[in-house]
Image 1 (cartoon, rainbow, N blue to C red):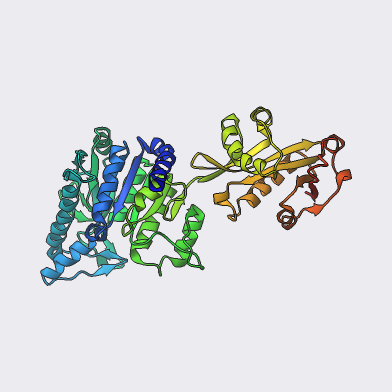
Image 2: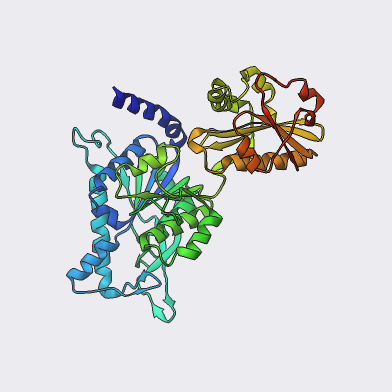
Length: 436
């Protein structure tokens, strides 16, 4: 029964994400290593599920280990320059065969539909084509990269028609020129250019790790564009190549308008679903906008604010507020929103040149993350803009935290007369003051 209840709870909590993702365009960056991993079958099942939920998918696959194997079988080896394979005439045949092998592996996996399997009844349509026009990299530092190329243009109308028809677009790391030449491309370059050209909602980059870690070995769950750039500048040359490629693609895509780039671990079963259908996900995300948005509250936020306040009201930590009162005072509130969910709030009540700070509350799942301090800074900035020179607050259980934020102990005489008359002696709240 417990397992059943957990499933029902998870399914209900995932419904806002299902609704939010439907009709969105996701570009999936799948390295050749993932096609050989034991978790590959589960990845295919997860991609099929996304497609069945109405998500528009473009899959860009790599083939580096497949190419290495084909070259080795022929007694050949590749030279690299600036991490780009030099594709000469002798190795081009191996490249084409290896890429074809990788593509067929994907098409076959997406075509399965045996009974008693997650793919049963999926009937996924997969479409490929000359979506990518390419050009040669040319000569770099005196070295001719020959048949190694770069993306010149993405055939956006053709891709959009494919997605509008409900098919998955499958792109290989090959491009074609107006002269009929074939060029070997970096799959990360293809994925980045396609995500940018389509103005995709997400770039999901599969990698062999959950993402990047901090100095304590903890997973860094989100990075702004600036933080991602700084990390790549500092660590880009020393982190594993696959992670560097994934993070760079996320950064470049978001820099050019894609909303979010997320790293997905191809070795972890269900990593894609966890990243997309739970609030915190499982990997590192790069975002171009405000993933956690701090803004003025509106009437649509009343329900979310009440959910934050009610547990503390039940414990007697906060004074109970009715929905009607909250609706009346909603313009006094600011909220921190994450994926459409209010995870923190605070209110500012002005009394001339002094203001009351109230309802500084953070969801239990997001405490100790600095969000309350962020809210406090925002409220102090707002107070200054309104000509407020001093803040006061009343609290029964969070005195130490406010002392750490620069507040000092006050007394009833420090409060505006109108607020003194409303003081609840039975609660015996402590009073704190901060000069702005």
